[in-house]
Figure 1: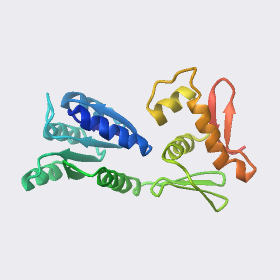
Figure 2: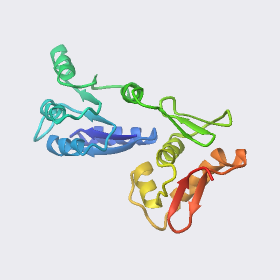
Figure 3: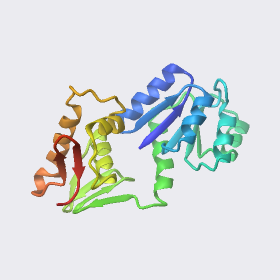
Figure 4: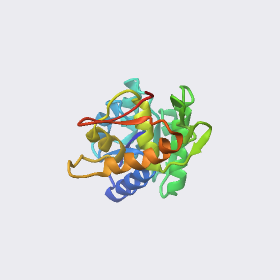
Length: 223
């Protein structure tokens, strides 16, 4: 899942980004309202975490323009303004949820997952390739009726491969989507991660689904 944080406090933004990445999300950060609106309108994010007090364009106006453009991406407002009128204004303005600073990260994570679940419940939340199933809502992988325990990063990698089943994904693209990093040709982070995922998804079941395409990358498909 791809999230956008619009937050001008550097420490808060770094804290959120690190915590969300550790839980398997890909995270972009914008530090002012104008840049935040531009990134949000690109339409590549699954949810926006939005502060209100922002330079150049405040959160209220960002949200108004975002909704006026017809975007329905969930927005969670994260702010120190705790007045009832502020919360009502945010929710009536198109926010999906509202969380007051200071906050517990576990609560933020739960609220993000609930908001994403609302959207995903309107579509098919289960990906299937051959005898492998991945439930995006419960983050549960099953093959041949056997539960596969995945780390947050392994889940993100498997979700990417299954979402693009039949497509060859380059190491560069995988590094960008799963680790939110520029790929270093001398790094073997992608290879190591794929190897570990294969041990769980393929090795116990006799028939591989994750394939290496020499010189190009990896593909998940039934052959």
